[in-house]
Image (cartoon, rainbow, N blue to C red):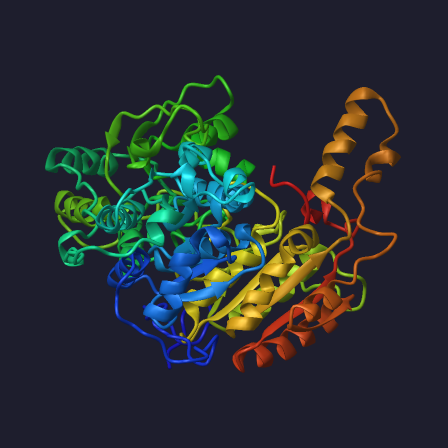
Length: 617
């Protein structure tokens, strides 16, 4: 066993993801006739050929034909059904799975009503650029075949229109052969960068029709997602010359892959330039936080130190940075000119539309490279080394990050969020943990990322309630690996999405869950305080309409009602550290463990870092 610089055992290594096939869950009651004879059998067969391993769903009559085929034709294997208690959770689990694997998992949604339930989770996946293969259902399209009342209210003429503005592609095929092609195309498009959710609506009448001819299935190897566009030789040479000639180069590392080889290439590029690296806490790790060239901890919003570095930069390389224009506004000023030369590498432009503003402000770029970070970094590194005439590391162009020792948490007092974060940091530093999420307002100077799977990033769309399902999907992808899946979610996030955890208990998906519980939607408390100050009204009223008390919610009782284990409320850091140890034993044995950790929003030194519930704004 090796030890990395972070103290984590095992070192940085690639892991085989999502290879475990569950057995013993939802076994077939009786052996089935597996001979294909129905259109929905062809649809199910295509999912298997696409190597879709799981399909999360809340059962619905609109896809009863497909459901039968998944069970009685495929035997509920490859894909295996994951029963969820809400459609939003089904999509959220698939998104969490994609955050780790970068591949689409399937979801089935019941007619228009199930789709409407799932819209927030679909928007999250869209904003986070996570691939999800969503199957819907409608109809029958033939009005003469509809049952009175229920089939009419559950049929839409253009169901995909509900989510067309925040999916990459949708379709409603009219034959079994067309459905096979549609599923192949949807999988291919979802998997192509920039990735995102796709939607295929399957007519009830089509699903339940008998096959009148053999279906010709495509050779999936001939329909793989395309290789992302590579930067031109001219663009690589121009970028390399700009960076090698810079006095103060800065790299903004944004949306990048989970590949360890690409992680190592990004480190080598920064070292070849001596460039300062900034990263974003809203995204998964792109660079080791303890590296000397990472002078500021990853941030939700830029710090004064981030602003100073950006102002001093003479060349900035943006590797698909999230909201580049916003970064310039927050660091330089709203109307300030960006004097540095900007190299902006992204393919995100291909996904922008006129409905959603998730494309953010239009940033200036002296060299725009329509490629992915992975496609650019290695050839750019080769060009930089060639121009420098050496593969040696360059002298750092900015002073290294000052990293004073973190003060220990207060042991016996009620925890503030910072105390909780310090205990989590100590726990993670000696284990290979994948954090599926952090509570809002997490003190980012307490994180220590040394592997691209140490954290998988926020949900994308900023909706409360996604934390539980995203964490389950992440844990599903890691099942059978050496990594410990863990999440810290706010009490608002937990209460809004807690019944997602039943699926984890039912499917035997190990997960350690910490609820940072301050019993209030505190982010909105801060907003009400601001309104009171601006308008000269009583600041003392800021908690009215915000607290989750009277009665106090028994969060562990809710968890145990879903079949989970857990404890709490845990009131101080000493007891919380012990609870994490107990929870780890349960998770290592295959269980789900929930810790209700009480957090005092008025704890010393908390300031605005006490936000664990509420909207992400």
